[in-house]
Length: 427
Image (cartoon, rainbow, N blue to C red; front, side):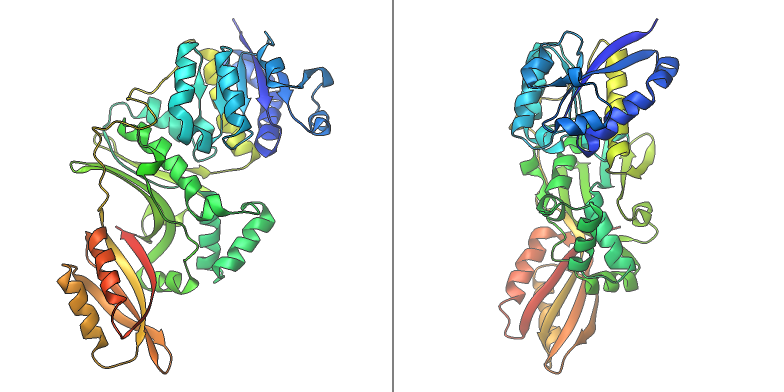
């Protein structure tokens, strides 16, 4: 017997349009293979012509969220508006009306997950968010339904397509950051204001959600160390290549005996690391479980149909199940006070300095590192001018705090001109 479900889509932009296309194109296929009859019963879209151009009947174009939520034929509300303003109001209204919600909104979910889940529980409604992280890659379902046998030890991923595209072009085309960003904007990978992507906010929202699920602990965005790619230069990428490294913006989460470590920043990884070959706008997530070992999921991290695919998978799941998943951990806005976080994490470091070209400067640099218990793996001169020299220092594993203390001390040396770059290295 077919299960019937009526859907309302809030917003018919790129993702909303892709979701509508999949639902209508594959309607008969879903009946045959999934046993569900899904019908788009309403849309909420300011641009009426946009809705009509997709083939949506005028009678199904709602004028308000109240009209959508009072429609008895609507069981599932899909939010693809984005942001935390009107989107939050609409989602809460839908949940309070007893409607199941499917959202692709990572910022909304990362910032207001506890509040939204509380409303869902109260009304016994579903709250699904597969499309909030890594586009069409089924990472949420993997963490919830595929890795239960494991204590997940780490999660590392390329979880922002815009920055991955920019870094790929800098690495393979030799472009500057500014040139790569401009092309990403032309192609629609980057917004006119790219801050959320290039400064790491988007990846931080996603890592907050993914690490919470992976480690079964609420990880607030405030717990995530964040650093973007705006200071990255093609010179650093070239130096990394010479050392056998590829540069990626990674989201890194580790559940260790000392506590949880969560950070987003540019990272050098070895060329044979499977994440190193993930290029352009593609995303990938690498998991390590105590039983299964290593797993990697790879695919398109954004776009109308890839993200629409994740949304529709949630719609089908919701249509087929009467019981809904809620967080198995203490899910509140402040997180669990008992959770320990590692702020002074350890890593290897690549550091590029500009110094005055004077005798004894390398000795002073080495002494400063040694005084802060940092072991140098390699130091070399990589260029300079008549009066200055470019020095690259690679360290063995050391603490973040020690590196910052060392750089503060180096900046006071009369021979120091500039600390150009500090990039962490993950083996």
